[in-house]
Figure 1 (tube, rainbow, N blue to C red):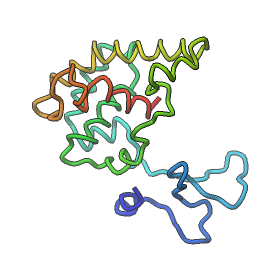
Figure 2 (cartoon, rainbow, N blue to C red):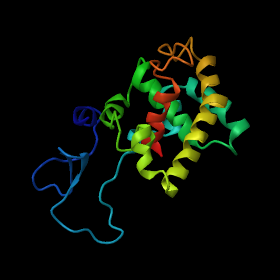
Figure 3 (cartoon, helix red, strand yellow):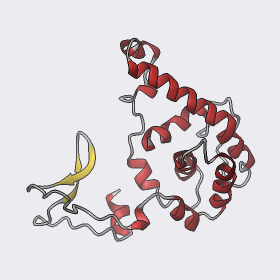
Length: 190
């Protein structure tokens, strides 16, 4: 990740007097390290726009995704938020893009986030069975399943030949575009 940031001229300085500095913490990953307190409303770090994973930046790097975006949103803008589009694109960057600009960033995200309830086993979920978290988790999972089935899988099938080469069949859980794998980028965005 740091090599990618430097290669693309991310404006950070790792000199000892730089405060805050971008730092890799062994127990939690990338973050900011500071030896001082900050004032309320003080700007701590400015991230240049080209590093943000936004629909506008995606359209500039991969114009065909504007077509996908327009397929998803004119009809469904009242149902879907942009995170669903970003989730498709994150999987594309991770598995199929010939020019994966954001892949170093994506690869730095937790790959097996078993700390999130989405990825808990049924036995682990029993711990929260009689809580509002359990109820909310079921609602959210039902929503993910519905959106994947009704919208996302159709988009992936439609663009399989030119974009989503790693996709095999909707029931194949080893495909990076399966329902199971689709939960991973959604968990990173939500």
